[in-house]
Amino acid sequence: MQDLIQAAGKVKLLVLDVDGILSNGYIIYDGEEIETKCFNVKDGMGIKAVKWAGVKTAIITGRSSPMVNKRAKEMGIDYVIQGRDDKLEALNQLLLDFPISLEQCAYMGDDLPDIKALQSVGFSATVANAHAEVLSRVMMVTTRAGGEGAVREVCDLILKGHGKYEQYISQYVLD
Image (cartoon, rainbow, N blue to C red; front, side, top):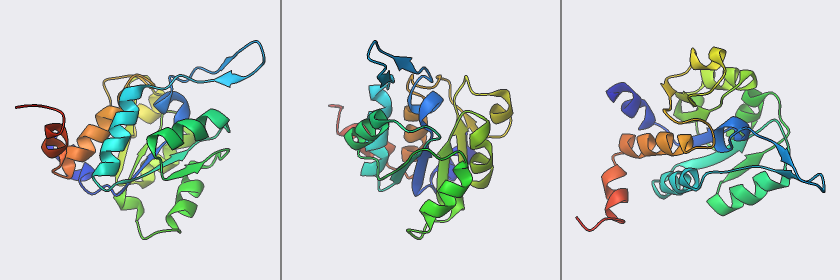
């Protein structure tokens, strides 16, 4: 666990997939054929916490959805890249905009299109219900499934790695 905390302490950019990570992976169409997704509020709180600690945030997703933009805005995500199947290429292009190396990135994905990005960053994580090929190639597997607070687990670990977890929690407790 200490190795994970040390690796998380180097993170300056947290990059997240959407379907299966921020959402439960279900794509639901209503009677008007409007796509909906289910997001977990705990993940949003975790993202706001790492932003408070000075970590930049990004979404890279293969699908395109207006709901992703809406949720990203609510959470204060710094960068949103949609409709990109090659996640590593998208990540490398994103890094051209500011001086952060792949070693200083955390990436969280759950399926085959995420593997190259996961293998290239300094901190890689996935959810408990990820594809088997992903599970075998990451540093951290969360106890929770995608869309059920798994991102929050990674965010809490990043806060611990940065030595800011207790300070962050102290804002919300009396003891």
